[in-house]
Image (cartoon, rainbow, N blue to C red; front, side, top):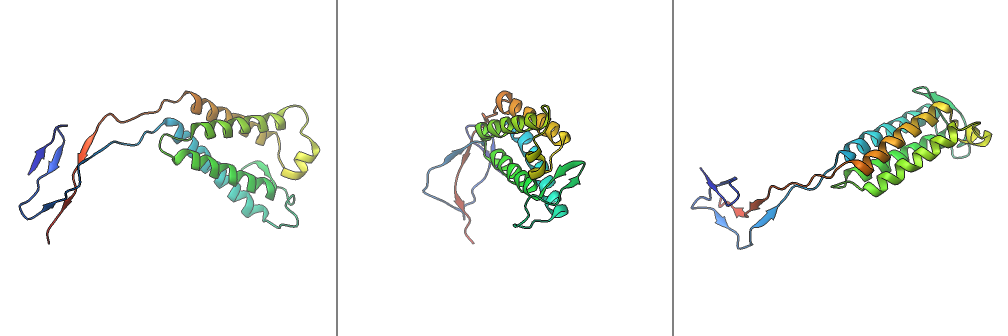
Length: 175
């Protein structure tokens, strides 16, 4: 049997053998969320998995972090670039799992990806950049597109806050 509270939601009935705490009832709401969190989470997981796959493929030797170069999912990588991608993906994931999302951090990470992608795509990729990171124009386009999507969603996606409230009472059943 359920009793109705002031908000119209069912509350389990308190039996005669149950003890109601003296603590006051607490109003609980759902945490805010944004579609930008979903975009950031998907992109973060993608970049983290891509970096892990590249690190597994290239290996990691601290005395040779720039070599060997290898293609993973048709994107060029060096061990250093794989570690950078893992860190980038982890930061995106962290920014996405906070209630409401750390939209400022997501926007900053997206803008950094756009700038990095433009540096790779614009004209000739600096030889040092290719030697250190093993990047190609495909990497540049990946970062330009992913970064633009992340920036746009961080700036434009709404934040949803639940308007439903419910009263939570603390009941301790007697054994």
